[in-house]
Image (cartoon, rainbow, N blue to C red; front, side):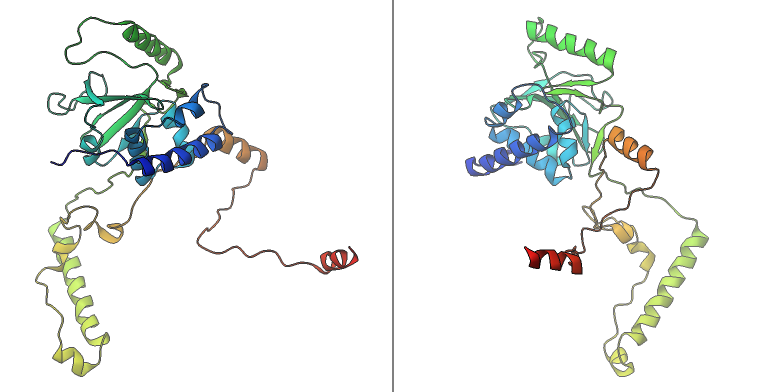
Amino acid sequence: MVAPTPLTQQQTELVRTRVRLLIEITAKVGTYRKGLLAAAQRLSPEEAAIITDLAHHGLQVPQLRDVLCGGHVLVDDPDLYDAWRFAGVSHDRISSHHRTVDKTKYPDIGMRGPVVREKLHGRTAQGTWVQLEKTPAAMGKGKKLPTMSDVRHLMDYIVYRITRSNVGPWGLSKVTERRPLYLSPGLAVAVGVPAGVADSVRATLHRLEDDDDVTSASQDLAHRFPPPDRVDPLAEIGGTLSGRAGRGLFGNSDVWVTETPARVAAAILADSGVRPRTLDLSQSVAAPAATKSDTEEATDE
């Protein structure tokens, strides 16, 4: 297996600029602990690679604040577990997260940095989880005696028990392991169907294929160039193709889970009493036409 590599210096600088701008945007709807902007200027290549991977898997701007404040993130991509093990900076950690996973085969991995403080990630049954912590813990292989850092880590746990919020490097987050932030969920589930239903669907597919053979081209071409005759067209529905293929109509679609700040949305809906309209960003928005009065005012000026 090829060892994971951090981003180049140029790529890291680009991510630094983007993270700084995103922090300034998200700070408008919530406060961070002091020092985050200064830490963002020292974003390491390894940290930049992790943030880039999260963005690639659908992390939205409002969700970045929860990540920086210690939100528990699940990503249905097991390859990220090895991709985030960086030589020289990653270390094995002990944690209580996802206890059903074999920790001897997939130990939890920690990494320290100016922005993440202590990044902790590990494997789930379907992918990878990651969480940022305020206080780096010294617990791990070869660490038996607790340190002052472990005492502070224990204090953070007490805060979690009282507030039911994760204690991240730059604030508190209600996005815990019990209520995680879910990116790129794998929604495919193999479900069997009764034999009678399967026979009916198979016959319908054969009939549709036969109709397509004579309607998609002229009669003489259809006989000269017949399409492949599949023995069982039902076998290709929900097939076992790699990646996101072979999962029905939306097999090649990316599915993202997004969130809206609940309190803000509740306040807007409570005041207006009207369901908000959605904006179709796929259509261009034309500028409103100028009225006659606007034209006259512009002429008078």
